[in-house]
Image 1 (tube, one colour):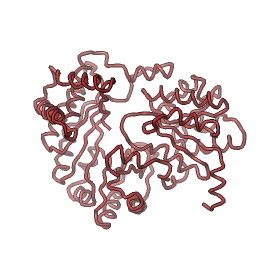
Image 2 (cartoon, rainbow, N blue to C red):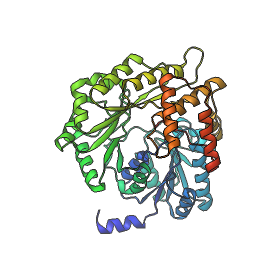
Image 3 (spheres, one colour):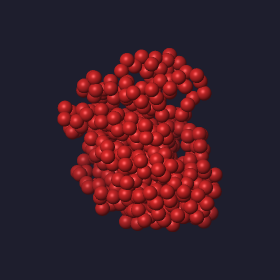
Length: 446
């Protein structure tokens, strides 16, 4: 961009994008993709997880902003998204508020019904938000359009994936140093594909470009690792080989991690897994969906990862037992077997994010349903205990003696599969409340 172009961009009213608090510390890659797509716009990303006063920061930007875009999933983040949006609207009554992400796509009506949200971007949001920004820049109000639902505008279908490959991510839009500090390492999140292979919308960056960008980003930000956050990184096996060989040709000095399906590991075979390990991969993350865990596939995947000297993190998502299936019991059983197979394997157990059938009629209703405990108190207690002890057993050892003792006890409990009489857990959580005045934050599994 020329100096004149850069100057004109800075004079433009900014598009403010907001990330509410949520589980984990992953970089807001969705907002990063949006901001990078909006070529020529002045984009400001506010991450509510790192700002000391995120609501105040958005309120400060609101009077001069072109619009406020908020990404939000179903669950507790809905409350913060609504609070911040309302505060921005109060500071600037004419500000256009556009929500996008998982929940607005699932139920735009509950978002628009608040009276604070002007429009919802459904599905892929890059082209939708670009068109909305262009309309606002031209002085037009937001109306129903492809991929954009507005109040009293009827329904519209989710937007199709972008018609062109997304541009290179502009990481200068993020405060990377805050992310590095939070993680304790200079590790960068990177997305090289989008969508799931099961549909027709999966798209991926060529392997050669991935290698070139990883190399350049490593040099620019002095990275220690790159985390590929693709939902289906291994969808194209040959592309994975291209990336692994390219990184290996660079010396294999860059450490990296990626998500995979258990079937990907089984199908890869020993030679391909060794190539992946030699290229610098140090860990694969495998999501185990709710339902009966596929024990045979998971154990075979674990055996192959162990043989290739690859660490792994099997994230078990469990749904409430329904009388026919106790996915929690099955998940604990498989997780214990994997832990016995390789001490480097992590097996966090978390509650499935998918809500049971039946829509809520308001944002508060959605948030309350996501936070509500399981209807069976005994099953809920078992879930909380299993989640706690697996997390403590696989947590990095702390410096204090108490943390070492807690971890040792949790390791014994996991080995035995005994989580009852959990006075140690209750003592830890009571201690956290006495020290900080707040309940101890539970691991989300991400």
